[in-house]
Image 1 (cartoon, one colour):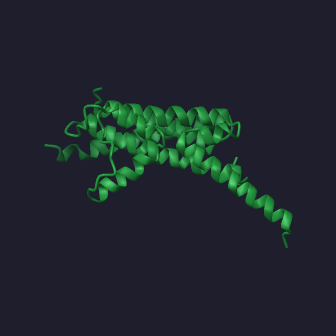
Image 2 (cartoon, one colour):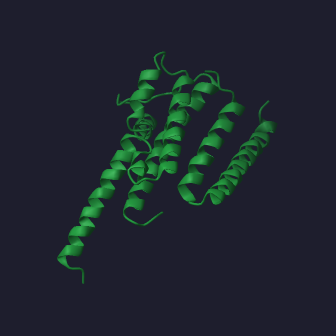
Image 3 (tube, helix red, strand yellow):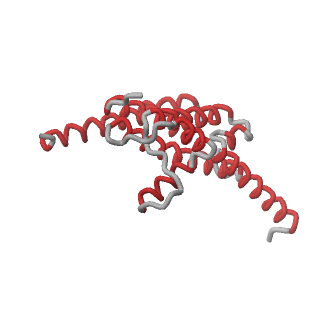
Length: 134
Length: 58
């Protein structure tokens, strides 16, 4: 049966892992960088960043909190997954979305993928901090 | 920025393959093998689906 010290250490570790996950979500790769996993940190930062920049430059749809249908809400949730890069995408896309061309349509997918990929990376940072993955 | 279907597919496949390789493998050689295999499968499936749709495209 775990004693009180084990319980405290376990909950402290859990809190630390959660903080890393939030950091990783806010700034892609930060959750890994704080664990000194430099290769993974740099890779996630560049991959998520590249997807966001290309997606926004190709005039993909950067969804907002404005009420819309279920797909808009899902798109907004996916875009928010990029953390602070969501603001970058909003800032870069000054001309608005143009999904009448394949480029704009691809851009929308790139932005959503960046969000989901970043959430996956943040989850990985969380699991690593808990000692479940390496 | 103008993105054609081929450019979009190639860029997407490459970025996701690299990210998945770093996410799921630890050793550099394993990562490289995973990235190459994943990229190959992405392109194979993408081009395969493209050709499968060809008869219905006109």
